[in-house]
Length: 408
Image (tube, rainbow, N blue to C red):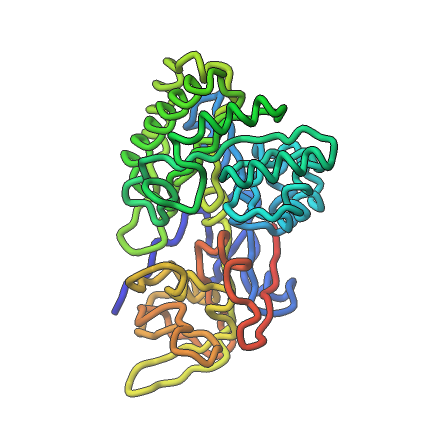
């Protein structure tokens, strides 16, 4: 048998069932009207942000990366909890506006911004994280067309990366950002052209669980920001240090030690160079804020045995949980945390594989795991489903369509 990943803290058992926000899963499914279903806990999100603020320096700001989970009620909840929002398309700009969020709180990153997207962001008053000389030229032209000075920060491609990060977004040749040595001259030209200079965005990687690696990267980020600022000849109004904070998905992974990261940042903030003394310094976090606060619920519709192995076939699958199926960047498939939610208090009695409803062998939610005996009608929970599930999975594959979403 294979292990599952660690179930996040904060969930409870109620009448033998998994409970989320004080409600058993059967009640949540009845409320939604069907499965599959994503459930997001606002209390867990708020607690995660409160714990993070308590660990970090007081002056550190927290931005939410909308791509992690753009569900409207989640964004509305976030509006009162974080300091800013980071988007990666004009579509996300519209989503945050629909959630009632002031675009002045928004920064827009991404290596392939269309001219229409640049115009929309400038017109709305958002900050563009400029990623190339060509993008700068188009932004300046868009500003002239609109009669507005673009608000521009420069995204830097640093020479370093976060060691051990799940996705490396800095170091060497990358489609993201401007090579660090090229930033000062480009920034000077843009400032002379009349932009509103909004500082730097330095994002080196994501999904790191090593506090030491993040501490080293943050130190390198602050040092690089100072060097670039000195070369520009202007102090920074803002520094987006990126994120990289990961959550444990797989067996033997452990939660990130944010206390040690916070302590190291406090020491560095106490001795900031002049170029950063008055800067708004922020972290850009997505998965870390919402990932563990979401659960994917899917109902068992068949129980079958093939060559002595039990399969629990659900009405969900990789079309909503691509990452949990092992098909979203992982090299070796490992099991996400999961459970039979309607038998949450029961002891395991058998080995089974939990699969989805799609006509492909890739549609696996849990391989050969130890579970209580489950029957048709029982509900399976896949945890760590609050980020990159509903919107980063091929919901329309085989005509299946999206899952329901509930915010508690």
